[in-house]
Amino acid sequence: MRTRKQARRRPDSVTPPDRLADDTVWPLVVRELADDLAADARDRDRAGKVPFDEAARLREAGLPGLLTAPGPGGPGADWHTACRVIHEISAADGSIGELLAHHCALSWTVRLLSPGLAAHDIGEPGLLAGSAEPPRAESGPAGLALTPAGDGTYHLTGRRFFTSGVAVADRLLVGARDTASGDVLVVLADPAHPAVSTEPYTERLGQRLAGAGTVTFDRLPVAAERILGVLPYDEHAVTPYATLAPLVLRLLLVHVTLGIAEGALAEARDVSRASRCAPPPPTGPKEPTAPAGPAPEDDPYLLLAYGESATAAHTAAAVADRATEALAHGLLAAHGLGVAERSDIAVLVAAAETVAHRAAGDITTRVLELVAPHAPADPLGADPGFDRFWRNVRALTAPVSPDHRLRDIGDHYLHGTHARLTLPV
Image (cartoon, rainbow, N blue to C red; front, side):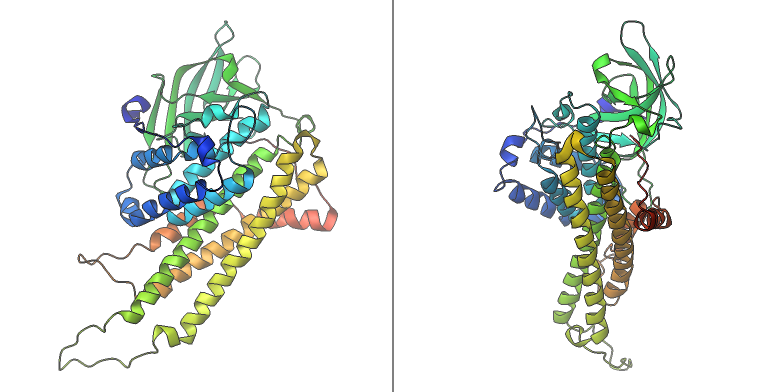
């Protein structure tokens, strides 16, 4: 087991977030970082190491500060900018896109649950945040307990699995049950404390570099100001604005999924283009040669496949953009957001998930067929690594049931049913 103090690596310099907020600066920084990540994405995925170096690149670029909920005391980017940044990074490396998505979602969660708390506390230069598997208030997070210490502080004890960021994060957002009151409290924890230890998990099917792992809290002292709020049991006690928190994460992960699919399609296109200029493989004088098929530029089936895949990507992006716009309006409405408006946003997010998941699954599967005849192997005979796109998409989409999403959408469309207000952390 590795503790955070042993594993932490700090950047020597960080791009100031207020400078990144300039619309002429952040696109250049993100584009340079994306190119850097894409250059060795296949090799890093194969190695499956804990992403300490990748996290350092993010910190040096200043993205944790940029991808922080804007507000008093913090120069974070607006919602549209955050989605574009995560989308572009995901096209280069889906795992790092997921890591950033969780960080961004957590900063918004802090703002939505505790408007008086400075959300930039988890996004100041050099800090990354990670999140646990989302428990619900009515069931309570298994294994995490908050015991009052008698002086206004608590002790956090237990063990939880985190889907992203725990191996490299500087802040963790968890839900834990107060042993005195029985309430589920939202806690902001410091993983560098000696009472916290982590065990990275890199043997996932996909998203191997997202920093997943198990964290153990051994009577971690938690000050009162680190208690962000209570998860209410009664949905009528929850404001529609606060319940945008789970929708924020879900939609950001949609952008991660679409980014992966678009990155896969772009790399496959490069392989197909390169194959037009590649010389035919040498054959011996007595070896029979197979009849030559159509050149890639003349192959109608290849053109059809790329046309269908590109159209699927464009369609899914359009649905995701509509959900992104609706959620942006909801975030701006703040506590003026009504139940009906929140329900409409939830339906659009569910539609974006369903369309994006299907498109990304189809695209990353088809890419394997498109590049198989043309992808050059390295000198050791290894494949070019296009399977990582399919694996990454599966890791993101498998836990989400499209049938449940479609049922909710249909119920809303047919009966006008409002989605239940919940607050998973």
